[in-house]
Length: 145
Image (cartoon, rainbow, N blue to C red; front, side):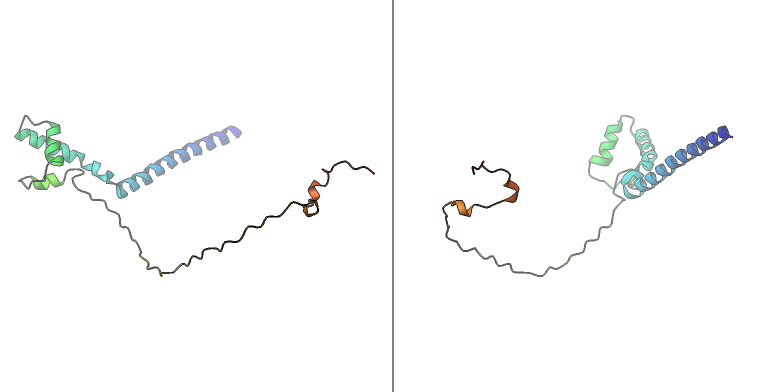
């Protein structure tokens, strides 16, 4: 009976761990594809296809020259401009809405008063004015009777 119980626990634990991992990957991918530009990676096959089209037109063009034409140089409206716009990271699709509220604060005047100078008073140390701390009562000089 205990052996069956142990295998049931280990099996349910395995399912839980696998399900937890799957759910974590799912939520992480939903977040990354929604709020970042990661969804642009889905367009990579279009990049390869467009590069092959350019390669059929010009056999000497390298991949880096293709990238320079489409990403570093100024945008030119030519016959394949619509295909150029479908390339990944060509433009920013993802934007977030940020709402700022501006409050008008009331102006308050702060008046700074300079303190008056008090004349310094010096006193001569007298034995009778010495503070008597009860904590220090044990530290007394020996007395003679």
